[in-house]
Every structure is written in structure tokens, then in C-alpha cells.
Image (tube, rainbow, N blue to C red; front, side, top):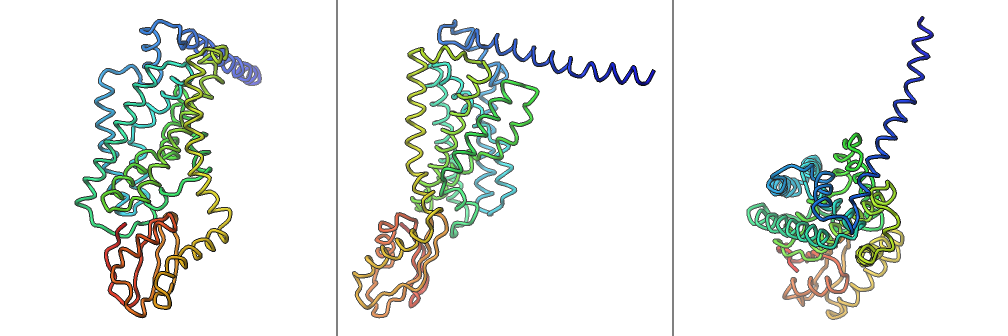
Length: 353
């Protein structure tokens, strides 16, 4: 009797799996029938909201509430140099949902929805930067810590992480039984913390570091969106025949142009990593060119580069450097880094750009 029960149980397992697979395939077929530029707008909007926003009334109110909360958590966590707090902010942050939805809208070629989602993302991002800037006014000013610097020098690896996370996240939206992956996606790809870095660094006048944080946000935005495009076609939610549709082609071209544009600063940062010796030699050479303006008087004592931040110690033997901030600005232009300069013969001064 036991053997027969075991056989029956083993027999049912593949049948259950097959039934679930058939159900998922039917769901994708039904979705593909609606996810089309030619579908009635009301049906398309209803299906779109159901998949990505849970068709819940008031989701926009919850979106803004969680966005503000995540910004506050991330800004304070960055100020404290607390990795745990910053990770918590990533889980709370709601910005990933409209970005994944943007990728699906690109795959459909739904221009109006692309514009609406881009506006939502842009206004949300600007709000995060503004809130972080205001919080920076009351937070203590300090040398950028490792949590901040870790989000100022993105490279190709960050784009790869965003791409894979976009694939996993989109799969979780299309297949609700795998929705548990969304928390992992939120942790893997930081969206709110880089924007908080932008706001905090703008408040401190560290524009190079603020620029680096913004590039990381754009990297994650483009990677997640592209991953969502891939999954939408691969899972059958959007039919491949739509690739010849003019609006789909137009939206895909714009997406790829954005990705290529982001790749330019990523390639520069990646080159620093794979050729550290050459990059360091270039830094020393450029510093020497600047210090030649003070012949025999100002010498370089040490150079430490951490991401986009360069800490430079000089020795002014003849008192030629009357304005340390002016020297700092010259070195910053020469190195294309955020530069803090300390004169060994003078008391440290507050860094600026």
C-alpha cells in the first residue's frame, strides 16, 4: 500500500508542474493579446496597472509616502556610514516599480505611457535629491565616508548588476509566484541611495561626487529598463512580431541610445580599475603640471585616491600658496576628481570646489 501511495505521489508531481506551466503560458498569451500598440487604451492601461501596480487605488499616494521615507532613511544612513541602514532604505524605496514598468512600456512601444513613467521617475528622482539636500543642511559636514564614495564611481559591473536585476525583477512581476525576488532586486540595485548622495554632496559643494552618484542612478535606470524589455519579449508578454512596429522600433532605439550614453562614463571608471598603475602615473603627472606654477616652493607629499575623491597633502616651503582653495580648484580640474588639499605648514581648512 505504501509503495502505491509513493508511486501516486511521484506521478502527480510532474502533472502539477505541467499544469502550472500551462497556466503560466496561457496567462502570457492573454497578456500578449492586450500588450500591443494596437490594443484599446483602456484595456491596455488596465492590464498594465494590474501587472505592475497591483491595480490598487491610491498607489500613487503610497508611492510618494514610501519615497520620502526611503529618502530620509538613506540620507541618515549615508551620513552615519551605516550599510545596514542604507540597505533598509533600498527595501523601502518604491522607485524600482515604475522603472520596470518603463521597460515594459518600451517593449510595447506605448509612447504616452513611456512619457508618463519618465515624468514620474524624473519628478521622484528630483524630489529625492531635494529632500537629501535639505537634510544635508542640518546634518554634520564631514569627509565623504565609504558608503558615499561607494556610490560615486560606477563602471560596467554596475550596469551588469542592474541588467540582471531588471531581468529578475520583471520576471517576478509577470510570475507572481516568484514575487519574493523583488526584495532581493531592491537590495542588489540601489536607486534611492545614489540620489541621496547627489543631494548631500551638492549641499557640501562636492560637485564631482554628486555627478558620480547621478551617473550610478542613470546606470541602474538604463540597466533595469533594458532587462525589463528583454523579459517582456522572452516570456511572451510582448510578441516578437511587434519588433517591426514603428513605435516599438522608435522606443527601443531611444532606449539603446540612452544605454550607450551611460556607457561612456562607465568606460572611464572601468579603465581606472583595470589600469591602476597607468591611472596613478597620470594623476602624478597632472599634479606636477599644476605645481610647476609654484617652482621650487610647493611639493607633493602624498596622494590618496578613493573612488572619485583625491586627498592630496602638499608642503608650501615659501608661503606661495596664499589661497589653498584656488590650488584645490586647479588640481580638481587637472585630475577630474573631487580634490581635498592639505598644506603641511598650515592648519587644515574646510574643503570646497
